[in-house]
Amino acid sequence: MVLVGDVKDLVAILVDDMVDTCGTICHAADKLLSAGVTKVYAILTHRIFSGPAISHINNACFKAVVVTNNIPQEDKMKHRSKIQVINISMSLAEAIRKIHNEESVSYLFSHVPL
Image (cartoon, rainbow, N blue to C red; front, side):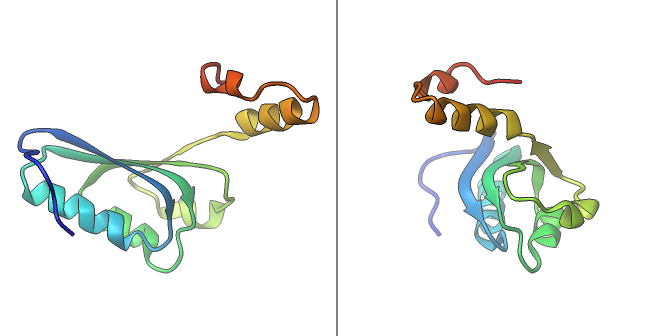
């Protein structure tokens, strides 16, 4: 893994679409921290969280990790000191409704249902 650019004294936000054991994203966070980043956050779309994923996140230098609830994992969320979950059920329901009614889904990109 190679870091390109100067990140000293900046706040880093790592974005990943799918994480399994969280080894790579935790390694990236450590790399950023050693390069002088002041805080590291992560935003993850699909949280598979297999094996030691939760302990990797809890032991990593993340200030917070934000994930969606599109994969049910309530049992793994009991020990989530740094993980914040965003409920996307209304957005998914509205997308399915729009597709079923042959309406534009792109409207949801700028108007998120709550």
